[in-house]
Amino acid sequence: MKQAIILNKRIFAFESKEEFLTYVSGKTGILIALNAQKLNKSNSKLEEIINENIGYPDGVGAVLALKQKGIKSRKIAGAEFWLDIVRKYHEERSFYLLGGSQEVIEKTVNDLKEQFPAINIKGYRNGFMGPGEKEKLLDQFRISQPDIIFVAMGSPRQEFLMDELLNEYPALYMGLGGSFDVYSGNKKRAPKLFIKLGLEWFYRLLQEPSRWRRQLAYFVFFWRMITKQL
Image 1 (tube, rainbow, N blue to C red):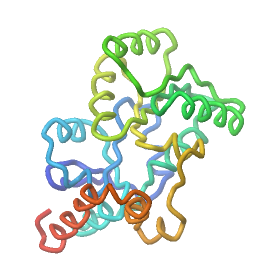
Image 2 (cartoon, rainbow, N blue to C red; image 1 turned 135 degrees about the vertical axis):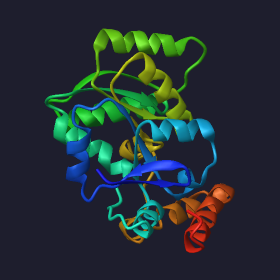
Image 3 (spheres, rainbow, N blue to C red; image 1 turned 90 degrees about the vertical axis):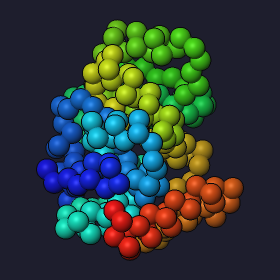
């Protein structure tokens, strides 16, 4: 499997969703979506987690950075890929869902059961965790034994939590950010044209102008790429 180091973070390259689906089959670890914003972030703890697990290119910036290093890859949108995992493995693997509000997680679970009647969901809970709740969650994992655990809490909180959970309960974890909100209809994803042009980040900025400081990371990243500082 081809890979590269970009700004101290290891990123795997996949030429198709099918290749990625095959690669993760039967594995334990954490699937981490890497876009320009996350690649540009300097956080030693997050870098360590990324480099010990499976970072994949979830953004045009990551794909272009790989191309600059002579590696061909397609963009793997995490907001779609988690459903590809469910679609391919729902009859042979079991799942646990963690994240979002109580309303969102319940609707997500109900919609998944409607879309995939044979799915085996071992459990679910919202993303609001107080002191001591991580241990209760691990107890649920040990009892129900899910194979694949989706965690939708936003970065880097979800990566830090998944790392702690993985150390206690081996499984395949995947961080999903706001994907439950999108799947349940609580939030809209960018129109297909924005996605196709790699401008999903710009659509989010138009929807939530208060995010502008976060989006500056994209410009910094592309400047680094243009000036070959990656």
